[in-house]
Length: 292
Ligand SMILES: Cc1cc2nc3c(=O)[nH]c(=O)nc-3n(C[C@H](O)[C@H](O)[C@H](O)COP(=O)(O)OP(=O)(O)OC[C@H]3O[C@@H](n4cnc5c(N)ncnc54)[C@H](O)[C@@H]3O)c2cc1C
Image 1 (cartoon, rainbow, N blue to C red):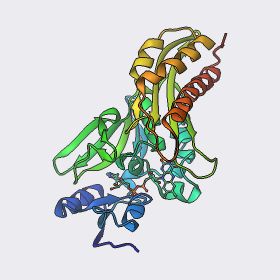
Image 2 (cartoon, rainbow, N blue to C red):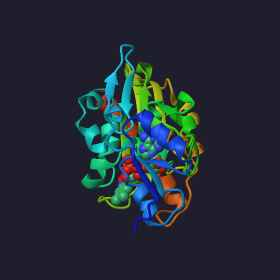
Image 3 (cartoon, helix red, strand yellow):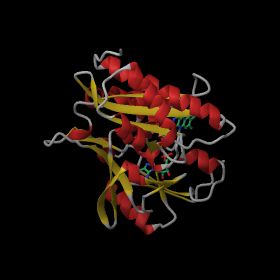
Image 4 (tube, rainbow, N blue to C red):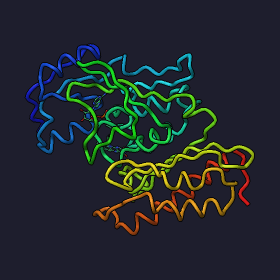
């Protein structure tokens, strides 16, 4: 049973902001694949809805003149897998999107909803983290941009004001050009399941040297995290099996997984080490690098 107290359909982003401003209890609904579950569970805070599903402004993906990519928050995971712009420039987002739920979920669930729900298991979050994505938020007080690493405030809590809409993700050229990336989701079954651990990396490899690396995890902490200590320690090293082993060993310092009904902390640590190795090894191979 869905106990909805108010529902309004926004005709534009400006209209959505206006509707949110007029009802401080309201929240946006995009694909509804999280909101409707919460509503059915009877959770507070989901009964007043402003529908932003399908707004064309939120579906736009562009390359700007300065080389920045903008990805609309309302792009669904299925749309992402079909987008030439995303496939050609940031294929890691396609890989991440392909791992979400089943086809029915991917057909309606959006990147915006995946990030704004604030959960650590969000499959697109680690990918956006290694792309250093900026989130553009628009509300009654204007437009602001927040780095994704600063957007997560705690489990289920994000830096979004009640009247703000996440309109787009911005990825500047220095954050994707020259990088190869990969995302690997480990789940307890191959069919539809939430990540036990998700791991993303973006690497710049030149002359068999790891010039730069960004490594991120979902479910390795209360919110999606980067691995600053590991990244700093291995940057500039030659590509080798030793490097892979160093990353696997060091990454434990950056993570903080917990035991849940899904998996123990110890098991998660094992997966964390293993996925770092697999993801970085795949990127090295894709870049034509040699593993000695
Ligand atoms: C069966 C099933 C399987 C799933 N499997 C996975 C999975 O494998 N991996 C995974 O990561 N997730 C999974 N999910 C969770 C869900 O599908 C995703 O998190 C999805 O991306 C949410 O997007 P949505 O558009 O449906 O969000 P909604 O449910 O519409 O919204 C989610 C939250 O974000 C807010 N919001 C949405 N859009 C905006 C916006 N543009 N600006 C501001 N706030 C906004 C809403 O107010 C709400 O708080 C699954 C869900 C179901 C039901």
